Image (cartoon, rainbow, N blue to C red):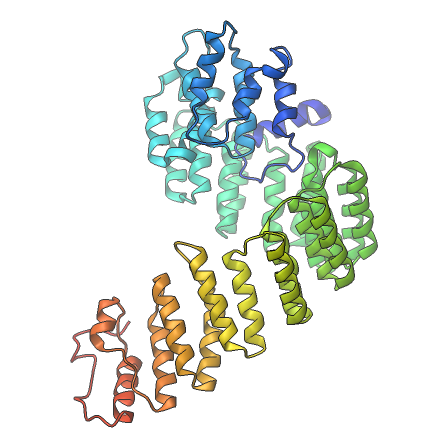
Length: 525
């Protein structure tokens, strides 16, 4: 049976995850290493694979590199280009991967499979959008519009949360007899679970069992549905069924089980699951170690967190930024501030990266649990290292200053956050907190500044205007915002707004005509 053959099972899992949206493995080879491995039969250091992998700018053409290689008298091998495409996709370098696929598709000597066209379709969706991917599938020869290419389009629908299109495509696949493996059902399971439509999960499982055989990914998704509703008994029943069907659980299976047991208050069962999980994590499945560390942190087991981190450092030459974020978040969850400081210093010395996520992880911890002095010191250290703060960095600092009621500093940070992005969408809770403090203090200058920041971002709401009006009313001033200004901003007046404007007008000593919703011919929002 497939489940009893480890190599066959690994191949099946890899096939099922061909279009998985999971993050790339942190253990993936660097361009030079991959190029050397994938082009060993070619011209050593000057192989075609190396030339293609060195392309970074989208302005440079992969097709031109292939043509130059051929003009030099070298052969171009399909399997070689396919491996380069695989690497480029893994590292989200979709533009050049698509160029290579397009070149391959017009070569008369290259015999392309459905799998090749499925990858091509997936890349078109990522580079040119869904409509282009749909047109590509429609224009394929009849023999190539099969399970692989349809699954590729289905994957794209699921990624974009397009339930109706996904369901329609599955219906067409059913009519054509293309639902004979677990992959399309797994896509639909993922869609329904991510949307919280857990009531549809049993039906999908039932349909899958009628037409195909569930695989390990099916069971992992099914377990994740149990995790959503803390269904310990349901999870144990699913795991028992896996054993009865001789489907070998992988590290993800035990990771999900451990999380369910932790949340369900079964620490002994969780510990057993974590031991089994660790046995199944290999250097090739390196991402599993981060999950293992996080789960031990949830169990408040600092010794295990330290042990696994030490094991990773002994196994791998260099730790990734994602792994540093994971260990930092885990030790901070356990309140180990000194250890967090040491890990951050290690990252600074070992990595040449300017990844703001690492800094933000520690910065958020300092702001929540330590002091603003430490947070400001870390921020200065970050800037001195040449790391540019992102919008989230400024939002974190703003929240810290708000806690200290330093409203001027908080507003400066929000202004800088807004300038970091072309389309900044501020954290709603943060903005409400700023407005609450401004109202408490009757802080007119601050209200004006916040309104100007939000107007630049194009995200002023009626609630914001009402808060600002209340601040002016508390200060006994008239807001220099007329009904015409509000209409120009396309802000819809409500009853509270009209009352507040009338109040500020009265406080200013004027005797205005009373403003009402009817007088401005607008309905309440």
